[in-house]
Image (cartoon, rainbow, N blue to C red; front, top):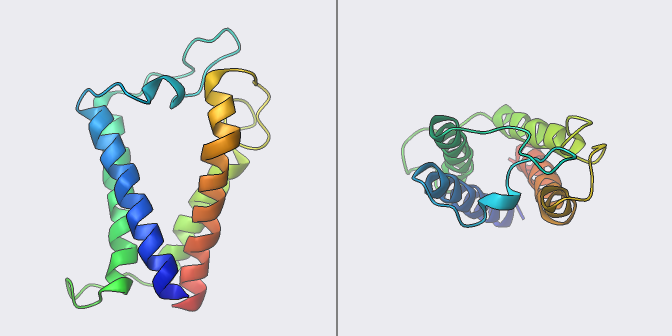
Amino acid sequence: MILFLLTINTLIFTALSALHIYWAAGGKRGMENAVPQRADGAKAMQPGKAATFGVAVVLLCFAWAHLSWLVPDLSGLRFPRYVFYLIGALFFLRVMGDFRYVGLFKTIRNNGFTRHDDRLYIPLCAYLSLAAAGCGWLA
């Protein structure tokens, strides 16, 4: 079971990192519903290229943490188990949200981002939260 979770999580984090690198490099596809929107439809924030690339690096580190347990001889470095609990906690906080624009308890609804948030982002983050914590428990 842990091999399955480690493999799937590594692939998901790598794909998400690649998507953020694409956006940081100037790609536009998928970006229209990737940033929270205010009630008037304007973007709630304008993440720059550096911030987007930073998110990509963090996601790649999450992938590396999972990969280090999947293939321990890859680098000789195996992240401690508590790293999985930290990753799970971060994604749990994302599921809960900021009580305004993102997460289960958001107050702004009925725009492109919130529909994607409800149907895709929250379930994905909930899975990643539980799966990462599960990897820590099973490791």
